[in-house]
Image 1 (cartoon, rainbow, N blue to C red):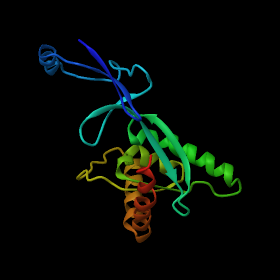
Image 2: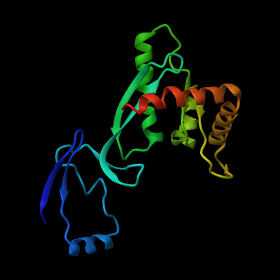
Image 3: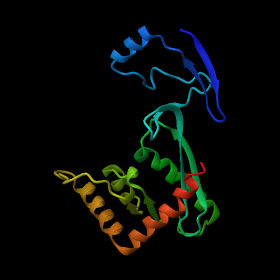
Image 4: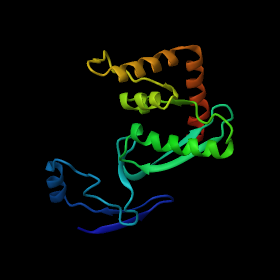
Amino acid sequence: MDSVETSSACFTASITVVTRASARLDRKRPKKGSNEEWTHPHDPDAKIAKMKDGRTRMAYTAEHAVDLETGAVVGVTVQDASAGDTTTMVETLVTAAEQVEAVLPAGGGVAEVVADKGYHSNETMVALSDLGLGSYVSEPDRGRRRWRGQHAARDAVYANRRRIRRPRGRRLLRQRGERLERPNAHL
């Protein structure tokens, strides 16, 4: 197999030219790529990520926290692309809380969390409830839920649902779209 180097403005990758025989073999392989098998030759910390158009790339996930009142970015973290949003939210929230505390030591700190439905999970809702933070996280369509033995998760999810259906919750979710998605396009 021949190896060809390509370069673009923000990504350098090693591409392998594949013959027909090796492509036929690769189609039958059960898992074509995993983070355990593949590493980027120049950036071993990058992970395989699926893009919105279906392609895969070696990438990172950049998350940022924005103060909805002022529009100021209060926390930015860069994490593995293989980690889910619900697990990376904790690190971003801690970074944002530290930055707010550094600027406003006498202030109340982070009191509420507004996020899109990619961050919604039972564990996230329970964790935010345990920290005493008001959550305004959009809820994905999951159909009817079965809550046997999950009373804490049920209570946290229902409390979040009540908050996002109120006028204030709808306003905060609209502001999130306006103030957070716009800076996100520039990352």
